[in-house]
Amino acid sequence: MSDSMSEQLRQDMACEGLLRCFHGLTKLDEECFLALVEADEPLTVDEVADAVDRERSTAYRAVQRLLQTGFVGKDQVNYDEGGYYHVYSPTDPSQIADDMRRLLNDWYAKMGQLIQAFEDKYEQPEPASPAVES
Image 1 (cartoon, rainbow, N blue to C red):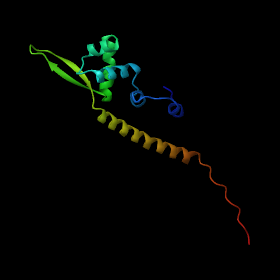
Image 2 (spheres, rainbow, N blue to C red):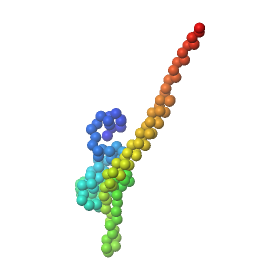
Image 3 (cartoon, rainbow, N blue to C red):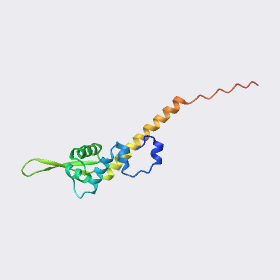
Image 4 (cartoon, rainbow, N blue to C red):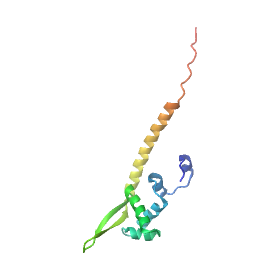
């Protein structure tokens, strides 16, 4: 993805691109998120790895990034004999969208402040008009 905002606005972007735009997630992170969304039930890391055809450790890192950004949730499943494992499921899209809106509003406010600071710093004073004698 481009660094320039004007270039980003000219590009075609799918809604999944917001994962990268807002949180710097990778294409693999998007694939893991999609695998979790398309699943009928929560998945283990091994199941996510199978779905995206990657090693378990690679899928685990992607799932952890999704977890840190709040795009997925983690639940513990206990075995009857003792022990447990974790399963992951996507967060409610409305909650994710609300979080992205909050981030966008915060970003917009910060950019507004920076633009004002730019204008204040580089604004040229208007030349004084000569006094007219009567």
